[in-house]
Image (cartoon, rainbow, N blue to C red; front, side, top):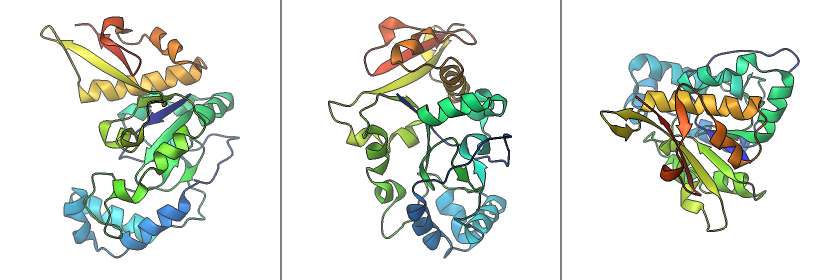
Length: 247
């Protein structure tokens, strides 16, 4: 099975001794994006990217200095958001990384579908960015590439991504595809609710559980137990596994 994760806005440079980096497979598309992005000044990036002037300048600099031949940082180590801090790939062994490389896929509006060992550079670009690329938004630019890449092997895809990123796959699903979304809910005032921060943490922990326990079958996900979360059968079905954290 493949597990898909959203990227994080915050990025860092990090290394794991002995880890061999791979090249992102969709650099041709990334270079097309860069060709357009380099045409915008920092102030022209602010509104469509919904960022402040400092972040717009940082994004501008990253686009201007982008080098497709630069080694970069392994994607799984490069992202530094709440989800990735809970996944904690810095503590992975080389064997853990090998398993992750066969099972985890990180979805990026800039790089496409990434393997954990793909070397990437810092960037800031989200699918909700309002810039146009050849008259297309980013969902239209990438089209069904994410779907084709993930489902070409016929494997089950475990969705641990946010709605912004799972939208790259869901419109193209067929009745023959198994796309299993894991929802993490918290009991608040007697009702199960989705809390964004708690869900990000749980997605990271679920991904870590899959790697460390070498889970290769969706049934194994049901045993996930962390911070009070447990699998709830009556809120789950073939396309949705629900985990609930009690009050």
